[in-house]
Image (cartoon, rainbow, N blue to C red; front, side, top):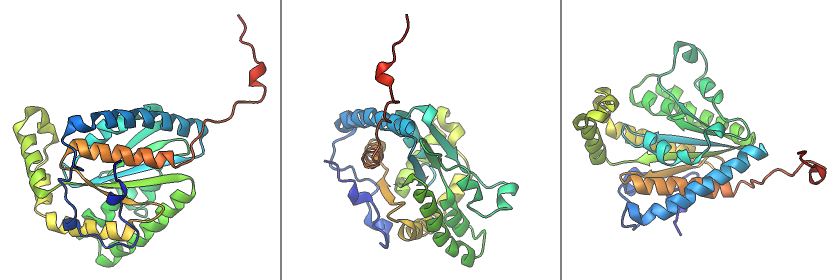
Length: 270
């Protein structure tokens, strides 16, 4: 039985990322060792999503955060493809527009949270406002420090509205990031993924680790938990994320809606 609780950040816990191993493989021998479990998770997630959509009483918000080349897109492609696109949306958050900057930092986020019956995946999120904003000193410290409380309150509001929230920090090592960025340079099919700006962000690695530690420590709550996912091995990352989502959805009380009254008496005409 895969121990996913081990990767969940308990509320009020001070997180030190050096105590986590981004190359953790759960003592599996490799991709082939987890293939059957991944297939089972994929099949179960589709069934659970269909119940979520049909029942229309719950929603699921999945938040993915990572350093550049951390595997957010790959996780969406290999794990979230279990979901029917009709009931699932993916939202990527880039630098805010002038319109978005004219509102509070959560304004653009709240508009994209899932309605009941839906699954929404955030590729980056409101946490950029305590990560990149902090690292690059885009606002005074007093402003971003207050945002941890605002984030917790916002997520509580969303959760109280029937949305289950899961947050995953896909944690890779600095050496693994170097390898992946180099691969984008060496492989012509991945040139489009390479952005020279990534190297400038890489130079701020230690600052980003401190920012992530603060976000994980201050914003892992009972209603919106953070999970630190070792992500050097894509296959183990996929197994963990899919298992956590499956276990969470199994605990949401999802059921097929009851049949309409008198359904048993209806005859389909020839």
